Length: 274
Length: 313
Ligand SMILES: Nc1ncnc2c1ncn2[C@@H]1O[C@H](COP(=O)(O)OP(=O)(O)O)[C@@H](O)[C@H]1O
Ligand SMILES: [Mg+2]
Image (cartoon, rainbow over all chains, first blue to last red):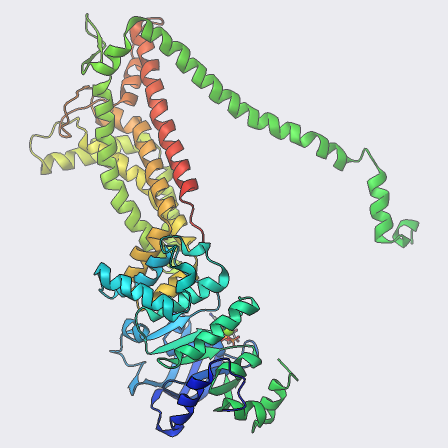
């Protein structure tokens, strides 16, 4: 843990270290997951155990199935009509592919932040209030509180508090992305999936989002796809290295980056391919 | 090997540029003039129409006062003491328009939501052309459809319904407008980016919630524009109301009774034997001008809405 290039205050780092890793509960248990786009075998026998209040990074070259995998965790991948899956993903012990598991229920507790910021073409306020409203929160006072809390949680409150009624598309790309994170927080999920959330952002916005990830892991479990290995090293506790749809290696982030056990992992992180 | 193939591309380009009077140069010089003339034809036509309307309308108002035209509720152009109060024709037109919109807006928008949010690629490929065929049906055919199919059907349902009434042509004008509303709204909804839908789905919204709470608001400017354009067509629609609406200008609102719209009046006079230069002859220009102003306002409104509320994604 000490070797990690972390940007968060030391105090919280200590807190995390005090918690014995083995005692952490599993959020997701992925068992022999296979996925096909038509005949294209995109995920092959994926097995992963994702723990609560950890940041899990997914790295790997372009086209190796990172996005596919993360979208499988909230079943967004099923929006592609030709997708077939096979295997088990247990979310808190329950298989998300069960016939009676409603995707809406799953996606309410598993939030997602996309590669391109995608706010709704509504006001900043309405962007945040959308989720709670859809799930039945109508009271204006409660909504006001949720909006403030979520925007604070995503470290963007001070920048937007005077312009809550302006259209979200007036914000910069980095602000839009933090707004999308806030929108996610508004329905108090349990897991946040992030698919290359900083790839469309400038370096300063990227840094802000990374700091935020560190902050958020106190309350949430985070799974983050990144093509940037320094980012994975900076923000994550565990790292999974994907290659051609397979998990080559999954371990503590510092071990992956200092002493990988697979030759292919070493080649990748030392920049020999991808 | 001829000599030019030994030249570099750069030399060839230079050589071509030096031929001042090449075909390319002639085209470049004259095409803009041709294009301008073509555009000019439609501008001149529009100006011509407006001028004719205004000039002939002036003759009308030399005899009938503006006060009578907008103040009286009697439209009796054929009486020995003719009265020219426009309200009955306006009421008839609005009655048809309102009935048409009550039919066209719900069905048109529902179709648009279905096509854009629910239909499979295959269903869309079949349904959109059908919708476009419906838009291409000549209005005279819709007129017969109103008189020979819809009216008899309505008479069975509503005892005492007059054979010529506002309801039947109103409904059929609505059917005629459905493709317009559906197709423009569908375009507006389909152009809402997928990433925005994904954002809503990822928050646990159902497809219906995504459609109604995200896509429809995001496409609102296009949707409203489609409705306004539909209204403009309903106001200007002629054949259907002439055939199935009767010719009874009345300021009383009763969709079960015969009406007369502005357009139907113009047809009636134009087909009749009102002599050139009579006040009856000039009256169609006055009505025509008002109709023109109505539809112009509608189109301007639609334009303004699309520009004012253009969505940024
Ligand atoms: N919508 C899709 N339809 C068909 N194939 C897809 C689709 N999305 C991804 N794939 C395929 O799945 C593989 C993994 O893609 P993806 O998960 O996007 O990779 P990554 O995010 O790691 O770059 C690629 O071979 C890609 O071509
Ligand atoms: Mg990807």
